[in-house]
Amino acid sequence: MKVLVEGPITGGTRGRPFAATMLDVEKLGYEEEEFLLSGTATGFHDVDHSFSRRDGLWTVEPAEQSDYCTRLIVYRPKDPTVFNGSVVLLWNNVTVGHDLFEADSLELFENGSALACLTIQKAGIEGLPPFKQGLSQWDPDRYGALSIASDDYSYDIFTQAARTLGPNRDTPIDPMAGLPVKHVIAQGASQSASRLATYINAIQPVEKVLDGFILSIYFGQAAPIEVFDEVINLNTSGDKISDNLLLGRNLIRDDLEIPIFIVNSELEAMACYNVRQPDTKTFRYWESAGTSHSSRQAREKRALLFKRDQIVGRTIEPGVNEIPMGLLYDAAFHHMQRWVAEGIEPPIQPKIEFNGKPPEIIRDDHGIAIGGIRLPQVDVPLATNSAVPLTADIIAMLGGSCFAFDAEKIKSLYGNRATFIAQFEAAAENAIRNGVLRPRDLLALVAEAELNWPG
Image (cartoon, rainbow, N blue to C red; front, top):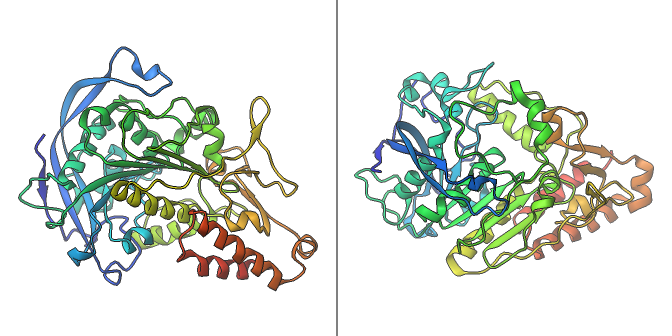
């Protein structure tokens, strides 16, 4: 379908895009522009109950069509010679009732990638009760024309957006400003990852428009192809969701011959245990010990964005996990670029160890998971960080927990602060050698460790 591109758009009551990056993009040599995309999208029906297949080899057929109008924020290098040829297309997450997306990856901005953040689901525009903080409420003057009738049309909207950004794009207004795009890489986290899993299994075999996929904190459950008017709302159905959250159900199809990368915390590792897939030339599966779906640091960073954009958010509960996943995502972006551009595969990483029926994570004497990717906060700990929740509700489940060691235990482990910092720095350098951290992360991680030392 032909896409109409309008923009870059400006103005509105707020005078800026909703949930845009907190980074100083101009200082990083980038420019930020927002566009409207509109057209007609097609929904899909499952063919012969293929979505019941565990192997992910699913088949769909075209269903109803609907007009849509949505928004796309693009970050691209000002200097064309800096551009590395890849656009990372984010499937904005709407689980909390408005757009959320990670537009703060230093790896993307420092390696020359372009970043495109797409509003693709109904809740991103219309919001969810009780807060109703969608785009159309946040700035009616800027976003009042936006409309997506149902999430059923999101898969085709994503395809159309990818074509609008890709090597063969052909629109009078070019969101990429003439940059020579070679690859479009899809990325989504949490609910967005589940929708990308459906896209991989059912849409990519037909459209063949994406060159790689990164699924972050993915629970092993692809989204339905048809939901009609139904939307996920943690405010009204959180307990029902949490009951089924840790039940991985399907594999990612293995016949596409494009790179697919899954990066999971300890929490999603539990969900994906029964649908784990072997690493291959086109598939990587990482899982990180001691982490959870979200962390204190990630929530604090998000709180700053909420304050800037006047968004009502949840309070930051004390005691949640304190090992953020963001640096692993940066490592995945780094490896994906090398994978699509040069054919260099990401390093294979160890998996978290499980035993028993039902399987449970094996933990060391500190209560920390054994196996998996070992970030320095796990190998040289001052606390027990894990995906074990503090309470039974869905938000607590996502936050995991952190229990600090007492001073006596810390002294018995390290003796003094200098010894601890030396061991921590060595562990961080080892993680860099293993390819799960980037060299730029070392100083900040060591500085945080110094602050965490008691007293």
